Image 1 (spheres, rainbow, N blue to C red):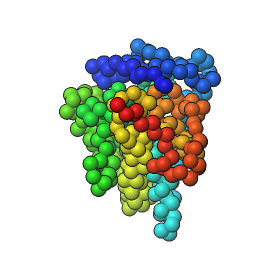
Image 2: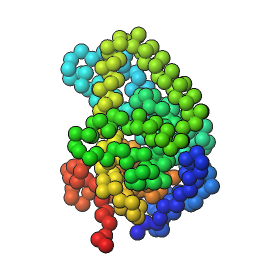
Image 3: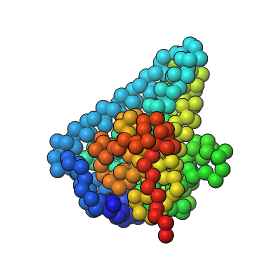
Image 4: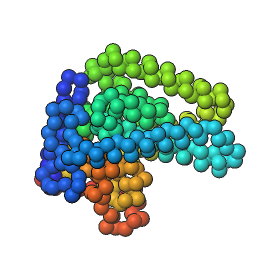
Length: 309
């Protein structure tokens, strides 16, 4: 059995504490202990941490370079257009995974460095990092709480709500933060700068390669990445929406294939129980699906239902 979650939220919505596991971690993986600041937990060897920073930063640079650079390739056939959109969708998805690492301080030793890399990682999908960071930390502190978990929004009441909820998540975050008086003046400045840079970047690309080519490469991918991210890796990983023990709140996907394809996002329970682990440090926790490799997305999860009362 895993340990309980230990969190304290300050007036800015920052998490001041982390999960305390009650069983040993795999050899070579850091143990998380209660911290007094957001980015203080570190492995015993600083060289290991610097290697993780370099790995994740290199991945981020490649993701952003490919996501933007491929706009300069002009597809000619329907198959090429489809490949272009699907590739960019996947690159946007991986960018959000790297930005997720930044919310937990895994891309640098300081808050400033994590903000830089988080902003950069989200350029392909155009979402402001500050919104993601604030709401994600609250998601960890209040997992599956209908009132206090901002990501509870993705839980549909009817099947036809799925695409609408998925594409509206970044806008819902703003509404959610505003309703709880968690928007500061510096956040508004961040939005202005962010959207100014995004507008200038994509208009610039459009002027060079064509507005139509840029629009077709961008907007379908934004829609698809919303579905790809928020349902397989937000709804399905919390399906059941337990507010009990952390073991039951979140679910892992089985298999190393899912681990590498998602850069560790498949290990959702492990991440919630050990949020200070970098994505690559979750690899020792991966388990193969006892039902076989082809179990599928819905069946390929390690779901641990709460025991009957």
